[in-house]
Image 1 (tube, rainbow, N blue to C red):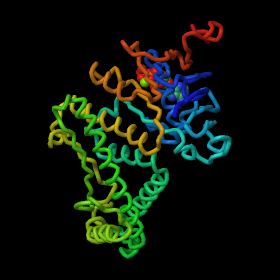
Image 2 (tube, helix red, strand yellow; image 1 turned 90 degrees about the vertical axis):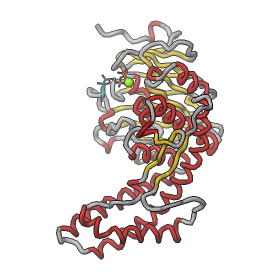
Image 3 (cartoon, rainbow, N blue to C red; image 1 turned 120 degrees about the horizontal axis):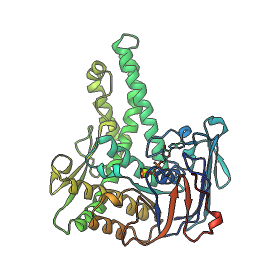
Image 4 (cartoon, rainbow, N blue to C red; image 1 turned 180 degrees about the vertical axis):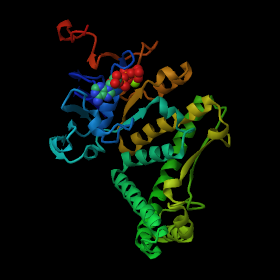
Length: 381
Ligand SMILES: Nc1ncnc2c1ncn2[C@@H]1O[C@H](COP(=O)(O)OP(=O)(O)OP(=O)(O)O)[C@@H](O)[C@H]1O
Ligand SMILES: [Mg+2]
């Protein structure tokens, strides 16, 4: 899939942006604080996922604006899709359209535009906290199975309710038997999430291992393992509603006393992790900076490859400020591995030997070389 038209106005500092990106590489150059990441974020928001910067929807509206307008035309093997969003500080005034059909939330757009984003923070995927890896896996799965994100939100909600109840029990406001109904729901949702995540990580391992082997010139081997806080092994299991749900429920019952004492749910999919190893050694604990970066890049590239395989469409790749963080060989590797996909690359300065359609960002305005001078916005003094 690739974006053929993109426009934005009033989204953060973006003003009157109208672009016809190339279906290959697009290079967006601009000095600091001009709007490069805002542009990437605007595209990302139309994928229906939450902002990768954690910006609240209403905060995307330009400081001196009432509305943020975004529009994108996406060409896929099946059809041409139009995604539109008019966001407002007053959520009742927002308007979100997928092929002209009104959606209640931005998440209603989820599943059409599939993006893989690389930011400098993503280079810490293997080093950072487990919740980064869980969110990464959950997003990867949701892109393939949009219904999974609803299951994952339901789990979050049940977890929140259960934790509140645990605190109320400790204060004598509620009784331990009130937990039964939540535990049963949590066990079913948790068992399902465990199985699906396990299967995804297994697939991710195959792709990432091959990619890491190439980056390291065959000298090192990457290993990925889903670490469950509930199950010893999930290998070959898909029967989440039977024995696995029972085992999850047993774990919750066994931990009940301790959970009440601490006031939160000690074990479950919200505490799981993905262990990343290089040559059998934890890369988080013992790996070099380069090994961690290569492992993170391999995992992200693997996400793109799995999307291609599962959806028969190449995702749109967003590389925000990441190439300048990498050495020449990793930079070349990533570009080669993404060839054929539509890529948006941002950078403060020209990247040597990188060919593609060039755009410049200045003060929230985007221009492409070759546009007539009168179309270019006048620069503010
Ligand atoms: N809601 C908003 N309205 C207007 N401007 C905003 C809003 N939110 C953020 N900005 C501004 O947008 C500007 C550009 O931000 P952006 O992160 O896109 O810069 P950038 O070009 O990626 O810079 P860098 O190279 O430093 O990463 C910042 O100066 C920021 O203050
Ligand atoms: Mg930036």
